[in-house]
Length: 123
Image (tube, rainbow, N blue to C red; front, side, top):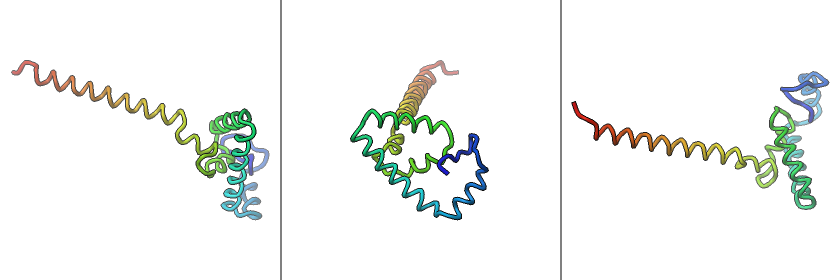
């Protein structure tokens, strides 16, 4: 199941794979357990080898370009681990900054239009 993806090629049928997995395991419990294991592994890696933790972070960003089952585990990890980090990552701040910039430009344009409409010639 770790190799499951909806957007790429798989060696086995995803439906057959999922049915076999569901028959043997409770997927909700499995996802929580694996998510915790991954979170602990990342925390230990970050503490013991920060350069490898950066590789982990880069790998997660690459995985996010697709639709992979592995991301389910990463997204369930507690805040403070690598997966929670993406919540307020560079993309969030970039979108927030662009939104504020558009708002400011809109207010300036509105103010200028309001000023000229009041001071313009009246018919």
